[in-house]
Amino acid sequence: MNMSINFPHLGIYLDHVGKFISVNGFHIAYYGIIMGCSILLGLYLAEREAKRTGQNPDTYTDLVIYAIVVSIICARTYYVIFSWDNYKNDLLSIFNLRQGGIAIYGAVIGAVATVFVYSRVKKLSFTRMLDTACIGLVAGQILGRWGNFFNREAFGGYTDGLFAMQLPVNAVRAHEITDQMWAHVQLIGGEQFIQVHPTFLYESLWNLGVICVLYWYRTRKKFQGELFLTYLLGYGLGRIWIEGLRTDQLQIGGTGIPVSQMLAGVLIVFSLCMIVKGRKTAKVKEQNG
Image (tube, rainbow, N blue to C red; front, side, top):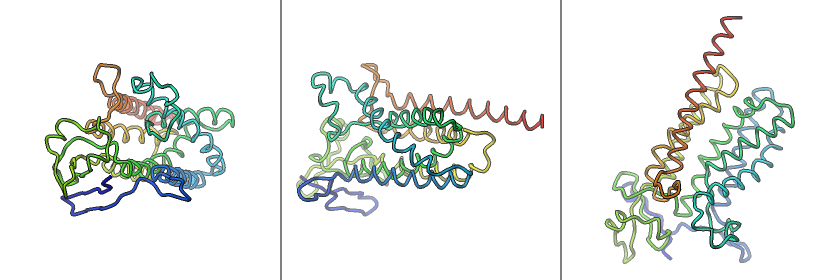
C-alpha cells in the first residue's frame, strides 16, 4: 500500500506516513497515541487553570479518569446510532473500536455529563468546572484531530486550493470517495491519488484560534459558565462550515440532513442566547450592588 501524503501547492511531499508503530509484533496506532497525548495535554492545561482560579488541581485528575470512559462510550454510541445500517447485521462489531467509528459530539456530550454528575457528587460548582475543563477540552481537540491525518480519514471533498491534500486511493475507504473526487483523480508514479480538503487541519487551526480567544476572555467573563458557552459558540461556528466540506458526514435516517451541521447550529443559537441572558443578569446584579 502506498503510504504517501502530499500537499502539492505547499511543496510538501511525505513519502511514508505510517498508521502505527510495531512493538514486539503488536501494533500501536498513531491515532491512539495522539488521543492519549491529547488527553494528557488537556489535563495539564485544566490543572493549570484550576490552580490559577484557586481550585484543587487534583479534582480534574480524578475527573478525567471518569470522563475518558464515559466519553468513549458516548462517542461510540453516537456514531453507531447514526450509522446503524453498518452494524445492525453484525452487533458484535459495535464493540470493535479498532475498526474506527467514534464521533466527537458524542465525546463532548459524555464529558459534559461526567462533569455534571461529578460536580453534584463532590458538591462543586458545575459551571465553574465547565469553564476550567473547556480549556483542556479544546486543547485536546487541537492535537487530537491529527489522528485523522494518520488514518487518512475525515477529509473533505475535492479541492485544488492552497491546502489541497493528495491521498492514494488504496489508502482510504472506498465509500468516502465521491464522484467529483473520481473525476479529478491524478496518476502519480503509476498510483491513483485523490485531492481533497484537509479538514482535520482546518479544524485544528480553527480550535487553535478558539483557545486563544478563551485565554484572552477568561479574565473578562461576567458569570460562571460563560467561558464554556464561548467555547461552544466558537466550536459550533467552526464545525458548521468544516463539516460541510466532509464526505463522511453522519445523516439523520434517509433525510440527507447532516447531524453534525444541525447540532453545530443548535450550539451556536443556544450559546448565544445563554451568553446574552447571563450577561444581562450579571449587569443587573452589578447595578443592584
